Length: 266
Image (cartoon, rainbow, N blue to C red; front, side, top):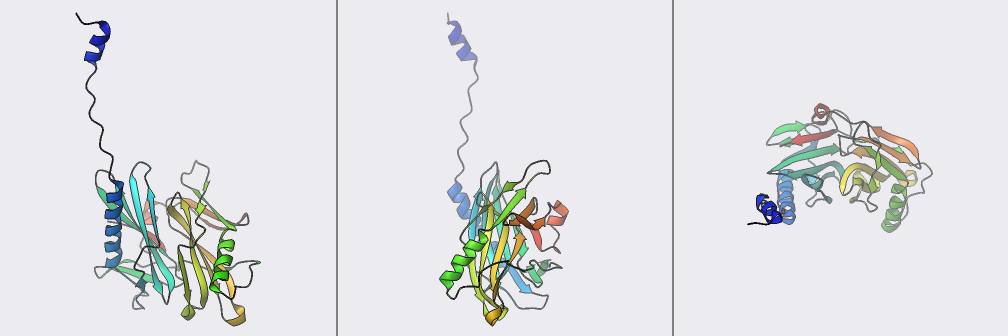
C-alpha cells in the first residue's frame, strides 16, 4: 500500500519540458541582414526630381529590446554632400515569427522622397528639422578634436523626457555621449556636426543635431531635435528650460507618408 505522500506525487501531472531559449545571436544576425537588404532597396532623393542621396554603407547604431517580444534595430542614414538628410531604424521583431518595420525621420531642411520598387512610399510635406542658435555657446573650435569636445559638452546640456502612456509619469532618456554620426558639409555651410541619440535602454527615441553652421566669422553652434518614436510624447529641455515638445501620435498619423516621421510596415 502506497504512503499518502507517494499517492500525492503520483497524482501530479507530468510537466512539459522547458521551451528552448531563443538563439538571440542568430536572430540579431538575421535582423541585420534583413535591415541591410531593405535599406539597399530604398531610393532616396531630395525633391521629386532632385539629387539622389547616398546611403552610408554601415549602420550608425544597432540596438536591442527584449522586453516581452525581441526587437533588433539597425539605424542607417542617407547623406547629401556629407550631411545626414534622412535616418531610418529598421526594426525586426521576433515572436513566433519575424516581422519588420522601418521608422523614417527627415533630418532635412528640404523635402526628401523615398521610393521602393519605383513607387514613392514617403514624401513629407514639411521639413524635418529647424535649427536654432545655441545660446551662450562658445565659438566653434579651430580643430576637429576641439569641436568634438565642444559638441559633447553642448549635448550634455540637453535632456529629453519620454511619456509612453497618458496616465504615467515621463522617464528621462539616456544620452549617448558620443555622436552616432559625425559629419561636415562645405556645400551646406556645415563646418562640423554631430548626430546624438537619446535612448530608452539602447533604443533611440529622440535625436539631437548640433552643427557649426554659417560662413567665415559668422559660424556658430546651432541645434535641432527630431523624434524617432511616434508612440510617445517627447519633451526636450536645455538647462531645464523647455525648448522642444512633440505629442504622442495615433497609428494613422505615424503611418502617414506625408509626415517627416513615418513608420513603414512590411
